[in-house]
Amino acid sequence: MQITAGEKEERFILGLNGRFDAQGANIVADALANALRHGGRSIELDMSCVDYLSSAGIRVLLIYYKRLKELKGSLLLTGVRDRVTRILEIAGLYDLLLSSRPGVNDPAPPATRTVSFPGWSLQEYELEGNAVLTPRFIGPSCPQALREIASPRSEVLPFPPSALSIGIGALGNDEMECRERFGVFMAAGGVAACKPAGPECAADYVVYAEAYIPDLYAASGLSMSGGFSHLISFACRGSAPVGLHNLAQQMLLTLQTPLVGFVLAAECETGAELRPGPSASSSQASPPSRIILACGVMGAGKEKEMSSWLAPWHPGTDLSGHVHAAFFPYQPLRLGFVRLKETVTRLFEQELLDLIHVESHHDNATAQEPVRLQRGVAWFSKIG
Image (tube, rainbow, N blue to C red; front, top):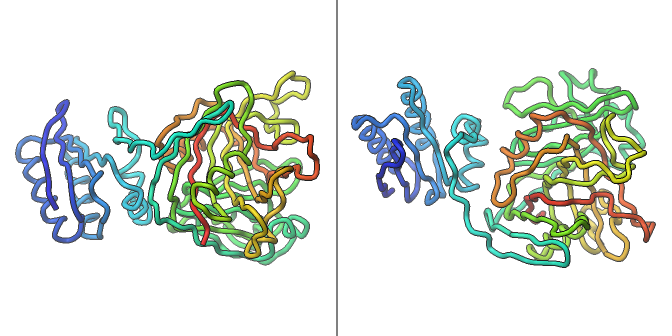
């Protein structure tokens, strides 16, 4: 471990380069102690050149976080790579050490490529090139479970920030409580949202914790864990929206894979079939603007492994997919290089308007894409 020291705006900055293992942890601890001796009360650790963090390193971070807090100071981590971020998430330290703080901006990596299309463009970032989402199936496929929603068989499904899940289930304290309340659910960025079946039922959500009650009980589910290899940031240049099929084609092309798992946050148009919330009026000339948080799977060609989960998506393409989506009141989204958990957490600070299983219109060549997007971001990985 090599460390460079500096100061900026009354903040001590320690740039770390190397493995934050047991040996590196001792070096970092000495550097932090030295900064404290020289009056440092606001210390920033630049982690952009650290790709390994062990329990010994976590211990040092916790010790000095608590020590600085007692001194009315702060320990800030910046430039943290996705691999290290996931370690902190698993350890339950993400919100403690990596929450957004005013005045501290993580250096964003440059986009790996920029592509322009008629009416829209995208920037692509590589997060962790070797990341792959590993699927796990629970019960019958979701469309079948929708028809058999009273199925009493379910299991608790964890939803840490590194996983994404869709299916049929309920939030509750035990299986018996959930048995009559199964509905559409989705989980991404460490938050699970569920809408029980029934016209009068409102969508609800919980934030993940190791021993959290209520739990997410899944009667049918597709859960994928492992992390995201890439990020796309996109925006329209005109009034014509971007379809989810446009983004899906680019994701599949980037990864050179027949299957991709993704989480999407975007400003969107909501048509009559997707219009959430009591404020939406069918008499409006144009659809209201909302924020959509969607997750699921898109594939090209005939995929046997997930064939029961995928339905043809868009006329004129060989795309198939399965997507669940939550809707929120409009708020400008930050584009470019952004982190999944922070984005999802910020969305759920607003009112959750609705949660649906997005139905495609593949059998109607004149129908609009059901998800029509103006600008947003999407995290994605191949499924294997």
